[in-house]
Image 1 (tube, rainbow, N blue to C red):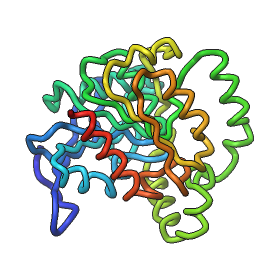
Image 2 (image 1 turned 120 degrees about the vertical axis):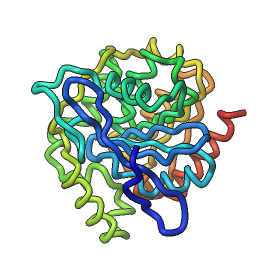
Image 3 (image 1 turned 60 degrees about the vertical axis):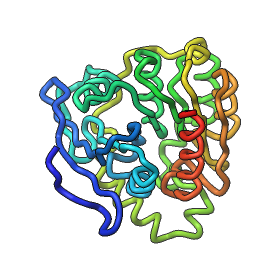
Length: 272
């Protein structure tokens, strides 16, 4: 990768590039480099690889090699064939292979958590640990889908993105932050390329995870509320559950200091 920017004047820097993942698609990727354990960050549907500016410097300062990218159709990444047929987890595999990563810590938020879960089912040997952040993980079991239908009726999708994605405490107290979040969303390419998955992930897949797992969500998350997070954590042996206060569906943006602290604590315990 060629160095193209240093986001902070005093602190870690990162390099940006486009990585060919096949099908004529090049994904925008940034990488802090270094010799530490690798963290790969997977963004939400309402987001892109640029959403992690409040995380990557902190994680890099803690000694990790931090990598983020935009999925197909999102900010600065190519679209590929239409309709898309390649699973997003296949793109992730090609990406980590291209970067020379044998194993990594995966942090997937929202739809990124669904992609990461799909990857974990197919390639468990490639994970050092897994953070399921504010995600419904994409289970296809009938009972789970029925619960999601009750939780997220069709009318829910008609609400403004910032209402769905950001909690009431943040929206009430941080109008400037809401404006910045909406500006980032406008650049993201949301839903331009539909997600495809390699697996039909079921409840029965979760107990097979043999790597450390943190299930994390906000106490005011409308998509992935605490009760949902508990259901998922209870199916994964040894999983750690964290509920973040005063946060909706985007704790990485709403309460970044708390979010970062919880993840670094988990990664530290996962490395022992």
